Image (tube, rainbow, N blue to C red; front, side, top):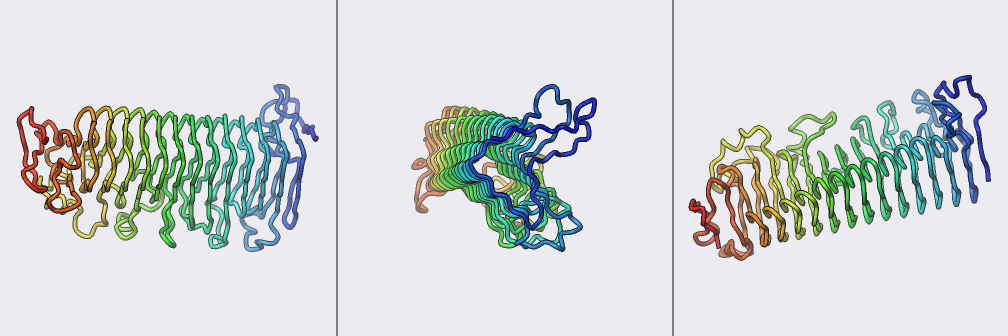
Amino acid sequence: MLTTEAVNKTSRGYTDHKIYPLFTIYQNSCLEIRDCSITSGNLGENNGPGIQDVCFYLKGLNPNEMHLWNRETQPTLYIQSTMIRSFFQAIQSAQMGRILMDKVFVSECNNHAVDILNPFVFEMRECVVENCKKSCINLRFSKGFQGLGQVERRVLVRQSEFKKVKSYGISIFGDNMNFQNCQIEIGENKMMSCAKDGIGIKNLNVKSVLVEKNEVTGSSGNGIFLQNILDINSFSQVLVKSNKIMKSQLYGMVVMNAGVYSETNEITENMKGGLLISDGGDKEIQNEDFYKQYALRNIFNCDNIHQNSDSGVIIIGGGKGPIIFNACQLQLNATNGLYIKQDQEGSLSTKTTGTDEGAKSARGGGESNRDILLDKCNISENLMSGVYVKSLIHPLYSKETMIYGNNSFAVYIQRAEDKGKVVFKGETKNSKLKEYVSGQVGGAWGLINEKGGNSHSVCKRPACNIF
């Protein structure tokens, strides 16, 4: 057991804001720690402001020395079965360090528990991090880091717990969109009571991102927040699989300007809504032609989005690629199963007609496919409408999707000019709308009434119902 205390204080306490490492690991060095308990004595009220003691500090090369970088000479820390308490930071790494943590308990850090700049290898397994004043894990990809973008790197966080922190559970941020040959894997973890997002990943152009089998609950922000994530080399999607996200004060999951493949996630009991999909927040890539050629595909397969305090799924903006829901459940949400507001200005849609041909032409010549598809989904028992369409720029296709038991409309279409962009498709050409949709389809302008096959006409009597 080791208890530490820094001694170089001024009369006003610690005022230089320098770090005070207990262990410093230099280039071409390795430190292995096992079965220890390490506690700092520097967080008392009498120490004054600015104390920044770090248990383990990995000192990498300076940015102007990166031409000397060699993967075999990186500072390396291996720490197992150890308790670290009450430091400003438990671990800090400057550039391209190698850190392996196994069964480590970290608590009561006055900043981030683990703070890494430009990670080379970071692996955490079966650890617990709690009661930190910032993020449990903070990984940053720096703008000043040049020349090693193609070096293979990895970040792995598995079977760990992060709880009662005053910022993110895991934050992984970049400050540019240069490609980084890094594989990021976050799986089988528990995030509980984070003051910001449980998992936040923003502004990255990386080889791969996998977020799977995590349980994220009680975040004061969002459960999982994904923003500006690209892979310009192979155009892979962020994989989000088999997570349970619940009781966030904002949204369960936010996908903003990123391409995601989501599968078998449960998103429930979140205050602002279950899933938010938005095309806002671009960083550096502002060229619309880029997204016409490399569309950001968002695919949601067998997700269960239920009992959220607002809409189950919220789509804002015209999108930068197709949005596809396959065999998803949108049930028992406090407002709508699906809410769509694509046209922010209220002008583009007026150029199209209220026919199916108008829906087809809404994409415009040469644009990438940005349709919304509901394929074999179940949208039921929501307290307002099953689908609420405030505005559409691109078509919404409902293919063999069951919409029933919603308290208001089955499909509410606010603007009459958008009714031709909502297209229902059955299993065969002769399928009837009533085989899949039970309830009203229309808006204040009138209701859609079926007259054989899939053709639509407007029933303007208030009492009209398609069934």
